[in-house]
Amino acid sequence: MAFFRHQIQRTFSSSAIRNVVIKNVTVIGGGQMGVGIAQVAASTGHSVTLVDMTDDILKKAMKGIQTSLRRVVKKTFSDDPESGDEFIQKVMQNVSTTTKPSAAAASSDLILEAIVENMKVKQDLFGFLDKMAPEHTIFASNTSSLPISDIASATSRPDRFGGLHFFNPVPMMKLVEVVATSSTSPETSESLLNFTKALGKTPVCCKDTPGFIVNRLLVPYMMEALRLHERGHGSKEDIDTAMKLGAGYPMGPFELSDYVGLDTLKFIMDGWSEKEPNNPIFAPSDLLNKLVAEGKLGKKSLEGFYKYNK
Image (cartoon, rainbow, N blue to C red; front, top):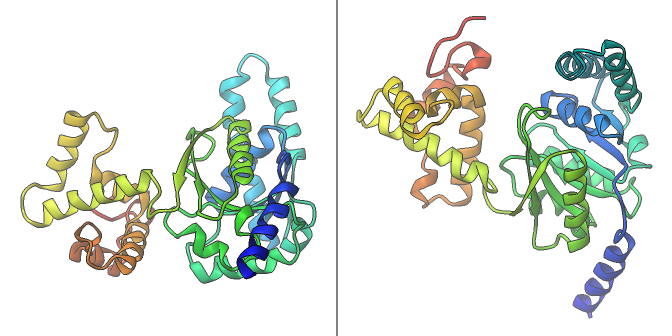
């Protein structure tokens, strides 16, 4: 009987969102990723509400969007600055801000979070929003490493929950990983795919597995380069040069690790190792742990595998 009720609930839930076109978007998180997602959504005609904890954060976020749009306009409207100014004004009119996620949720077709990579924080957020958002509203996470199904478990709408993993910088990077769990309905996946295309991005469909596609291939590659160096089989400079000139990569694995952030790399590996402790691909690195403990996090701290100038 419980199974029957669950199937009935899934049927009604799916039919309720079958033909939903995502127009009103709430982005939770005014950091670099959230700001980039808000900018792209607003630039493609979506009504966007950007949510964060303080007005100061939101003012900085709006300024960041405006600065980024000026760079876009400088390239695309170089011969028509008046049209460029009009474009900026139009995009900015599509973005509103609030410190109250419940107010934003009330009229949202999609709520997308881009906050700290912490499972409990994400679960608490969506558990709260689940009570405030309309039934048709789709929830999505921009997480790069946490299981979508675990985040969705805090809500009553696992069929209307998926992943939208954007890449940094969002306005420039064309790819979005659209992640479906075993509970995500086909209608939800279709809505997320259509939304991604409406943003001018290229979606790829992923299952809810560690790292999805890109990070599942990229992070072990960076970690294997690190282990190669730890074994004394190549200097970091030579390994970087080899991969750039031999494989045609724009950055070597150590340069890329510094760009991503060594703390982020460690966080991802720690999470994967916890879930699959016997998988040698997810084994921790003493060197990585040491650098992070010393606060050498890469470009953002001006030192990681390499040193950087301000």
